[in-house]
Amino acid sequence: MKKHSSMALVVFAVCMVSYSGPMVKGALSEGASPISVALLRMLAAALLMLPYEIRQCVRRRIPMKLTPAQWGLTALAAAFLAAHYITWITSLTGTSTFASVALVCTQPLFVAFFSYVLFHERTPRRALPGALLALVGAVTIALSGLAGQGAQAAGSDALRSNLLALAGAVLMAAHWLTGRQIRQTLAAEVYTPVLYLITAALLALCLPLSGGWRMPLSALPYMAGLVIGSTLLGHAVFAYALSGISANVISFALLGEPVGAMIFSMIFFGEVPTWPVALGGLITLAGLALYLAFAGREKQPA
Image (cartoon, rainbow, N blue to C red; front, side):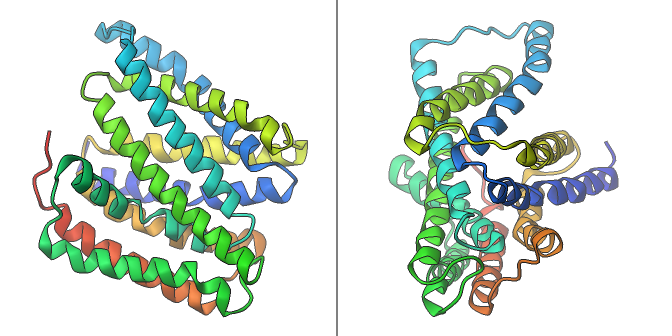
């Protein structure tokens, strides 16, 4: 694939991924529950990709049997992913889409922290200022609810929602690290659909704790946009673009997701972030850009 074609795909995919937050918020505004949104997204994505992944396994003769250890690690990764969706989607009920997405995008910093604690992988010194700057921005967003009116709630509600979004970043980092371990012995064609199905099952078990299934018909167009736009035309396109462009470029491109989410939210819902949220978001994105600029140059372990 030519490089300019890959770059065009990356720009398109960023726009589609940015669509995720507003579509989730739209479904919530129609009365859907956070767990119902996450469950339907995971189940629909798994069922849509399952036929293709099975064909790939058959064509490439990839074993589709998991060992007990692989089942355990995949279930752990699914538990982290399910918890991520619950915390992040719930955060959208009380804070702006821009704030929530910007906070979730800090997950590379938590990946670096857990990698150091668990695997003794050091972050390059030149990347530390960017990490600290991103953390300052994240704290600014998290505390923005104490400065007055937030996008949907004030005071403690906005603070709680911002902290939930930050928890979503921590849980996603734990998910990625667990997934990295299991992917050393299990092909992606097997791991991904099994992961999504287990995640959906865990979310289904949580439904009674959240008042049961709540997915009004009026929320289904938003869910279709979420599954088709964000998952199939977003994340899947990123995977295709990797054949002609580096993963580090995609990491930088994803920094545009909070900005895209803010623009979509302004268009669809008239949602404008307050100045503390906007300032914190810009600081966070600038810090992440600096962090990825230096961290991405280091050789990563196999």
